[in-house]
Image 1: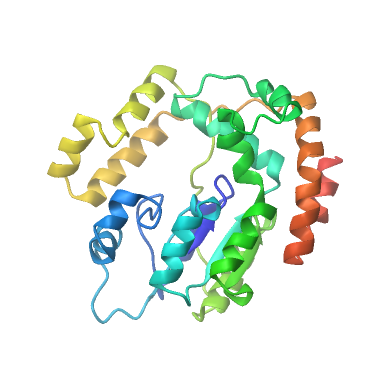
Image 2 (image 1 turned 180 degrees about the horizontal axis):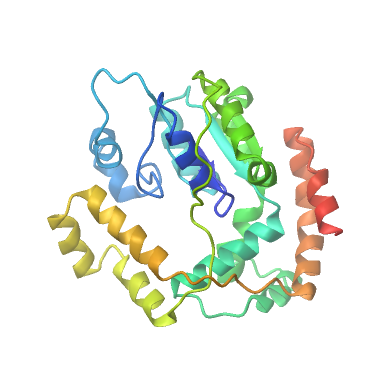
Length: 290
């Protein structure tokens, strides 16, 4: 299970790994069964059939799934551990300032968020942890708070931390290492020419807002469409509509003042994470100085 982090290449990693002939993965962006209460209540078999309808009774392929919200949701980790205590867990971590701003840009693209990211400065200075911006973006980048919870449910040798920056530089090497770790052919080379879930400006803010409303679970159009179409078709249409609204323009770079505040804020958390995990995070510091 790829448990996160959001905006750290988890979609690409899941899709590249899913190309392996000994691995089965899901079409949907997220395997949300362990996270969404209503889905979990329906039982594992029904949820599994929803995400992996091609699974056969005598299936020998390894299942690789992705739930990018799981690293900060303890109840979902607990559910996963109860279902399969031997599950191997991949936690992709991205330099927290970049991840935080990328996540903000994604939500702006989605059409519901209208606030200026510069508001994060007084929020941090005044320790306003209940503010929407803090809860939505800062909290999810506090990996040193989240990793101990992961270790609470899974042994350390079952957990693999992957640096997003290393995956971005050499996705084939990362995938091949994970293939070997999972016990499948480590020589397989996935097709990395296809890019997944790339952040871009929206062509139409109005269309983004409309899509956001359509994606709500209580939306009548969504309910009717899901009832008529096969789930795989419904998912493909939804993903296509999102991609269709992406322009060729990249998001604006992060403001220097905000960047400085965030770097200072995350520094002690990064130090704690390095001590806890044993992973060398000096690359984050070096790239921040460029």
